Length: 286
Image (cartoon, rainbow, N blue to C red; front, side):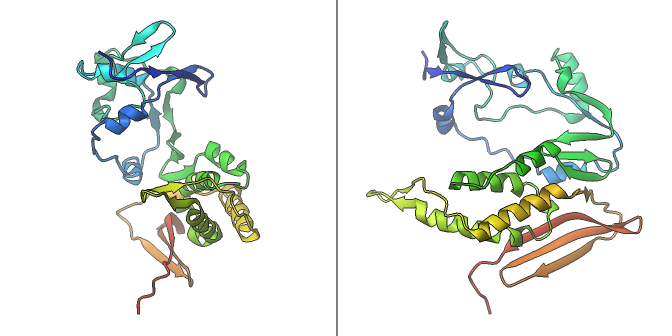
């Protein structure tokens, strides 16, 4: 009757509550993926331009409000001290498309289906709101201070996984940073060398990865601390684009990197909308 027996383990939520987790990696590998496009975050920001007030709602256990098809329930089975169970609603973390809501009818839909809202996570009529890893206010965008604190407290990496985590944290904010690619060049070079050292093929030709100690050097150290200083020491603010006004495009380059910025003149001040940067490949075209 049950396809898998999945043992759960508990972990704490940020608010101190207990989150029950399940290991659905095997199920996810066997699930046919639903290639529904995820909205581009920058396009979402366009929708809030000229907004003075923001409201954020958080559905209490939102996944559990979505009923699971009866033919799929057996695949979500799990075991605990009280016996063997299966989900009748959508479990958190399983694949497939989750929910479609008409944004303009959210409040009415919640009321109609008697879905509770978790008040501790709701915000209404505020002039700024946290959205994902950003803080949105009237026509402007800033990094989330909590994420900046995590970057500020990040210690020099000792292995590839930690270096990749650092890139993951800072990469989200590269559009706030002028010449990001130029700054992190020593770190990218180090990561490339470590990839060559850690990846190898077994006798069947399959590429495997071994854990190696990061060959940290002074250039990488300088790059690491410079990036942290630039991200955390300045008040980075981007403006949301006004398509009724002209755009200003600035570019720059050096031997190994290129960059640019899109800006607009607002109230006689040139304000950045986004920075862009990248590194050249070793291929030269004449």
